Amino acid sequence: MAMKAKVKPKSSKKAVSRSSARPKSIHLKAKPAKAVSRNGSRNGTKPAAKTSARRVTKATKVESRRTAVVPASSSARVAPDRSRSKHFANAIQAYEAAIKLMHAEQFEKAIRGFDRLIADHPEEPEIQERAKMLLHACEKKIQDRAKTVLRSADDHYNVGIADLNRREIGSAIEHLQHALKLTPKADHVLYALATANALHGNREQALHYLKQSIHHRPENRFLAARDADFETLQDDPDFKQLVTPTEK
Image: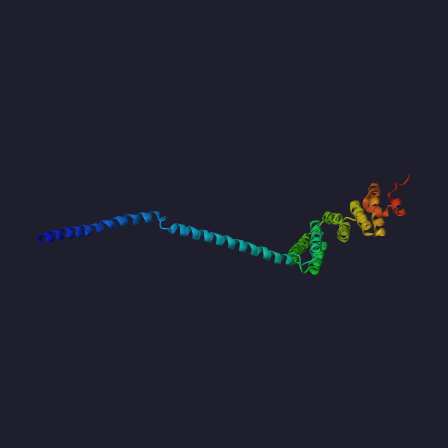
């Protein structure tokens, strides 16, 4: 019995040694936990994130493809609306014609052109808006021209020649007649009135003013004989008699 009693303390020492070994195992497990927290890839967390990221990118790519398809379909729907006007080319042509008249300072004709454009093409709001702006600009130009004070014969003559060059014959004759009232014997004013009436088809008035112009300055007959503005009178016997030098 005494021998058995000695064996029991040995077993208790082993138990103590086992119990003391448990804390060491706890400390050993703690180190891998830190390594795992640093790396993180060993426990499979990052690969999961990568796979999820790949899925997200794939999804975004698919969404981007889908969103890219939407404008294509919408543009396909808008295209018929842009070509809805069958008279778009005619509107552009009328707009450019009125612009040319405006640049030539034929503001009255430009205004009539813009008015016709606005009336004939209500289906083109953008062109109409631009035409209205230019129409108001032409009206302002006419108002500014009317405010210009023409005092001297030279003022009226210069304006009349400018109108004559733009083939605004009615306005040209009006200003030239004002100049003639201030200088009744001015041969250059009489000659300009002769050309204006010839272009306007007023034969009698053209010959009348040309005769007076030659009377005050005989050299004007040579100028008239070569002037293209008298083309309609080239075969007229009275015109030929005026431009032919008289024999002494």
